[in-house]
Length: 272
Image 1: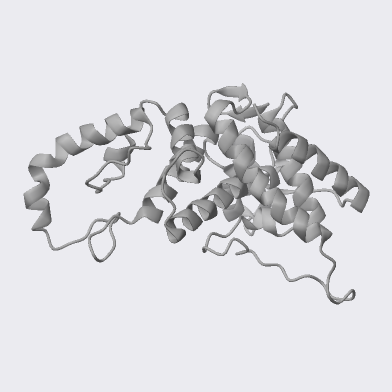
Image 2: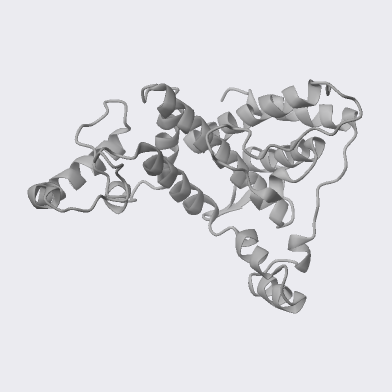
């Protein structure tokens, strides 16, 4: 159970499937790293925050920890979001871990776009749209993002297709005049084609905001090098403990980490 914007709940349906899939990809990477022996036993593995390869950096509050600690964080968050386990105390490390899962999703979407994979059932973009429509059925997404595509993908969910058609109808009368404008939309590249990665990133951001609300750690981070009293006042004003920025993941043994991996695999690879 997790404090979502609609109450203390678990993710369900398409939202749970999307989250489970992204966690599964993270788990594969972390497990592979865990089982890989370092070339030089006396050397420390280099920390690569851009491990995804498409320019999306995981939050420092997640990537800064040791591998075993990151696996523990992923397990702690996943078991609360997908099962009846109570959420951990509000903390920067847990907020950042949730965010890291959706950044992994952005990397997967970028991979699909880069390799030219279509939007279809089972694709990451298809799963993202299903989750978005479930969480935000009334959201005027396409109008808010000034979407500029001219054709419909037949794989889009019906609810999103209806929004698209409505937006196209509202803007059709302005098409000729907008084409004569010298400036480019923020959602288009220099050739006037839709900037798909910007659009899909916006979908992810809106889904995360609608699901979890404001991530306090991002704001609290600004107070860390300031007067500690200001940070405490800010945290109290938000109803969280002053230890919000102080909690750290525990050090874990190899056997404990393997147990966390087993628990995650049982949840992530479970079919509804």
